Length: 149
Image (tube, rainbow, N blue to C red; front, side, top):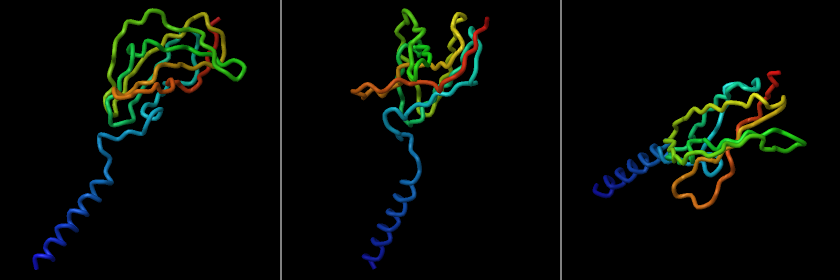
């Protein structure tokens, strides 16, 4: 009798572990380069217009992001590669935090003087406090810009 009762308790405990093991937890981590996604409000802009960006933490971990995303570079596609055409000067150091499964919205004003073409924005990747290696830069999908002139 005692042996049967302990067998039932073990079976119940195993069932509980299996049932809860299938649920997602707040500590999920898709891994380096996969913790964050960036989306744009639209795919085409006019020079001088603002680009609205949403940066979303896909993990269950709090991430740090440097300079409040001030260090965004504007890159233009040229000869099958990307060339930086605008980079911010003198960002104030602000260490921001992006909570688990949270989003932050940023706005990037396009220069009025840029020519028509394919562009993207590139910025430092938000990282874990425990990270010891640099992650690739976070980039938006390419978008089209037409000259305002």
